[in-house]
Length: 250
Length: 214
Image 1: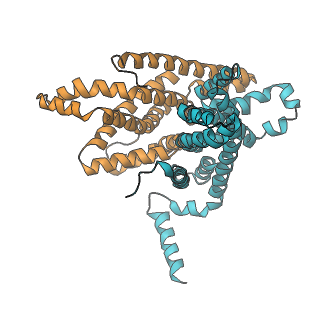
Image 2: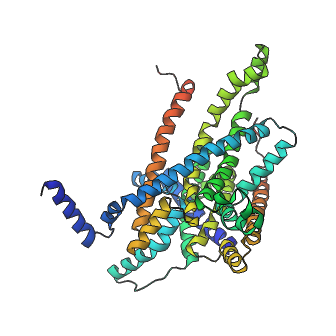
């Protein structure tokens, strides 16, 4: 037996008999937690993409005050942001299935699956919040910049492509970063409709071994790591895109 | 139940937030570190995880603590208490940042002027600092309150019989979950709309005499 095994044995003994937290069990069940982590990341990732695509036209309609569409977009954002994600998810998962015509439709194979329900709810939720971030970015473009484009003889499309969009998305970055972290946190409700995300894994783990808090500690640490890694990467991107805003180094 | 839970937890959150902001702004390094740890961990962990942790873990922890110290034998925490504790604890961290930010927005010269006039710490706080903290903190407070209101829906998961819990069980019993859930949906929408409108009115009142910026 080499030293590594000895250390593991000692740790196992400590965890079994002395430590208030049974931490070795968490490592023994790493497959369960890995499944949870991958489910959370995949769910959040896909809904960020689909929600972002949905948010783009909504945000543009709001910022440019497109008649009628602006009001519809406003109502959509207000309703989605004014209600808990949990209720939205329940409505999709429990509520919609009660209707005959939904069960007969082509959508049923998807809406029957909790995973797809969670994805739908997250997409709707994040699209509303992202649309607000996009609107904020677009509305923050100084009028002078737009006027300068017109003065330089750019067409509307050129101005949009060369000046407005690059300027707007940089402005929307901080708000969007917050939204991503918010969605990672909000994604925990997926566990309530039996999806094995990180919290789902934690609850399974606790039930399996009759433990009270070990699984939740592991879940909390996993979320902290994910959010920390995200902010690390995001700060890098922001630094790159906001290079022009950095104070000049002497 | 939902409204009671929200109001109790916002009360706890404001107290914790004021304490946290005070700690963060105090001169003591240790207090600053402690408050920093509090805000970063709480804001990094999803609310449901903390809530489940307090609900399942807090009870065991309390009892083990009681057994070890011999002070109490057995305590049982109700879902309501844990709900208030968990939500209040979480939003206390957000409130800390709100109050800290508001305090930092007060022009230093005003505080210096107060000291120069010979105001005691308490008079300085109650006449100059506090009214302005309220003014500057309100927009962020409104946001926190709206988020908190929506977070209370999660309390149904730890078995608190709030409107969500009632709606789900009623929906199960009658086989018509859609109608009940939609009702809850609109109740929440109504609650957020009412708070939105009324808090904005309070905001207007407190920013009387403020020049609206550009």
